[in-house]
Image 1 (cartoon, helix red, strand yellow):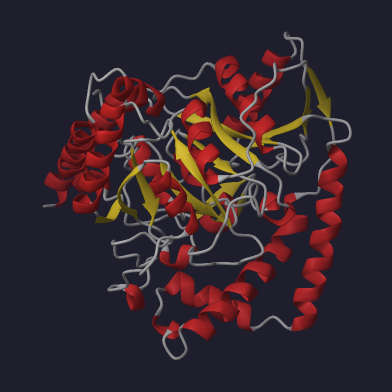
Image 2 (cartoon, helix red, strand yellow):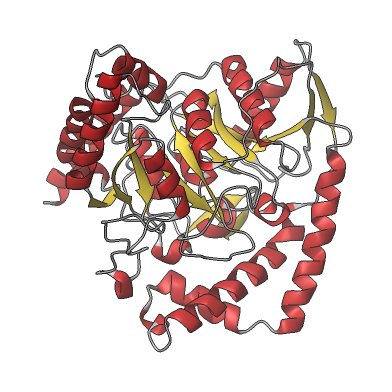
Length: 461
């Protein structure tokens, strides 16, 4: 099979008996063996159990007893999510030998659907960051792969898995999806179980898929969310909300992309509606209080006397959270409820919101700060600036490539829906994917990137 075919195409090849599930697995494992030394997406592989799963899938195909579109498909999981028999270290030295006894609920659901779990993927330490610095962006090695699901984004982008499962507390699915020019979905809060997922901030944590196209994203999410409806209705004329003030501080390239999309919609049956949203600054203080306070509570309880040895980004976040009082946290939650109500109100007049995923292109790997309209901002703060809002409100969001760049990568937008409109939002995003018509030659970009990595290694050898 071509490495960059879609999950749906691989499933069709399995059904047509053009390839067997063990052959599909070996193909992916061979590519990981060859290319992951450039990408470093995987923290642990599970080839023995994957082979057993692939053989079981092959028997089902031979009997005509296929479990569904994921049966026999190699999928990878962020190592923040308990996945047997892998080492799931969550980027923390205290977990270097941790092998969970049981699968997280989402992994169990994947396995019941016949997915072949090939390994676990790198994350920022404790999921506190948005850079996953140990991972190389497969199509732009001088830029970050994003995080904290950086291994997931890179593995899918590099053709090292047909799909991946990540977590998102401030944008950690959508940010790597944007940095790696793939698609990612943060579902409505509470729809996908987080049992067996190591928390960052439980009231903001989400679990969702990353894939190279919307059809694949839908297929994976249909397994993760037991309440997702199968039926899809035709897409009506859409009322598309755009909030220019929300992303007014974006880089000129991002503003150009949004202007291009707006112009494209104005020549369709869909209607663009300008609206006002809570400003990013309105949520950032509440976000930092909520996430760090909840994270501090978890880590001090579960790693007593050990959390001080966490990597800097995790330890600093925990220390910050310990400075906030119960009153600070209560005020943050009150503000959060008001903002959530305000976002809910927007869906009285629009069907979806379209906003940039990031205010900038993917930041440089070596950058500690980026410039937004002349103001220097830490990379972490900049990358979650447009995404964190929806972790607090719980609305479903798809990040999807929407504007092709000159180098063959893409800038992404967030498509946001009303709470628990997950199935409809995914269908709309799949429809918009055709309108945006952004094609990414991942294979060609990855080959060029590997040449760049080799040159850099020779230069610094």
